[in-house]
Length: 189
Image 1 (cartoon, rainbow, N blue to C red):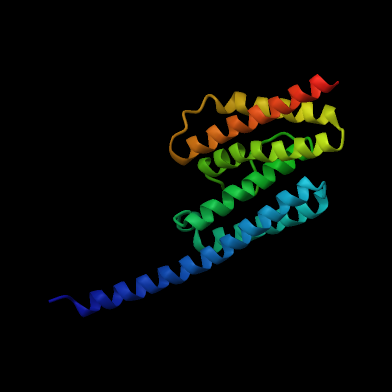
Image 2: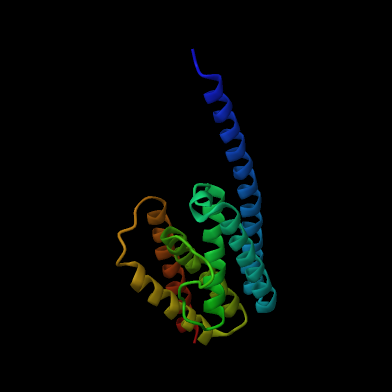
């Protein structure tokens, strides 16, 4: 025989956890969506809109932390994906503005979120360089390639495994694209 009191408490705890989970997923999906919008705004050179979106996402992430605790929200894959996308957007913003790529102040991001965001940043730098090349701004392409090289110089010291290894390998591929773009520009000069 099983204790009805025990089962009743399990049901209560499970329902509370599921309610939290749905809220975290919903809010995380919003952060993910708006982080992508910030990235696309940066691609278009619309730094003002990107900054507004990033500030909005910072506030949403801070509210999530306050409401549920960092330990609880990091249990959800939707949150981890959203915070990694946010990190990618924020780091791209640093790069576009010519700022140092550094720790994001207000938020507590995991090492995985930073590393995933940094690796994904290289893909965004390819898009930035492509736009720069299309506009004939070849010196900016060279600077973007140099930034990507400096990032990869730092990432090479990590022995990433799992999904981060896949992201690292993709980042290396993105650097090769930038190198190829720079090479083709030099040939045409």
